Image 1: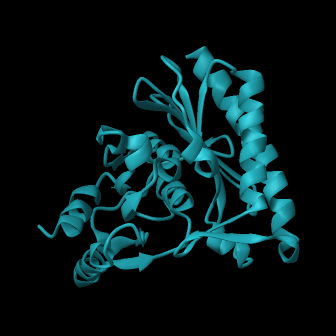
Image 2 (image 1 turned 90 degrees about the vertical axis):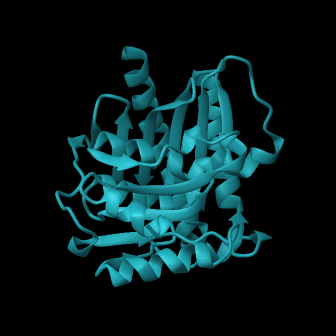
Length: 263
């Protein structure tokens, strides 16, 4: 446990350094070169350079560990018997490049197919969401808990959209949520939305498909804050394939799951 706590402190420090770098780019958006990776999927030198900073810090501190980041995933080669750092250097690139403060840095550490620590840092608000498995979740060092509600009618459920699946996979659950008197929210950053569920600001989050770098840290945050979440790491080849994500306060999870599944 001491090793994991040391890794958590390292991850928080690294996320802050990465956030400082990314925020510098955010304050000078006119200088950015934006490259399309696909439909509604953008990247900039801010994404690449922020990931490089995080990868270099991990290589210095934990050279035996593996690294899997969004901007370098295509070149990933697994190390044998190594824990793996899973990183999204800027989750919410679309809001980022449009000057919207809905983006974050997400860092998780996975060992033996379990997320054992997760950090999500919002540089614009200077908010550090952090958790280790079995040791609770914190926001800027203070314990945080999911909201104490029991129906989707008692708060905001954030909905993510992925063009990797058909629009109906998002629109049909959204319609069922509204028919159940729920209210939806969308920020453009799935990782930050999951952190908000853990902090009690949102009561749930659903996205029909997320990559592991978007959701690993956030799922642990929700679980350690007393909520429930779909086990994304139970999927075959989860690093590459990703999975659906459903997370919510304990009182809402079953209802949200039924809404998503159409039960």
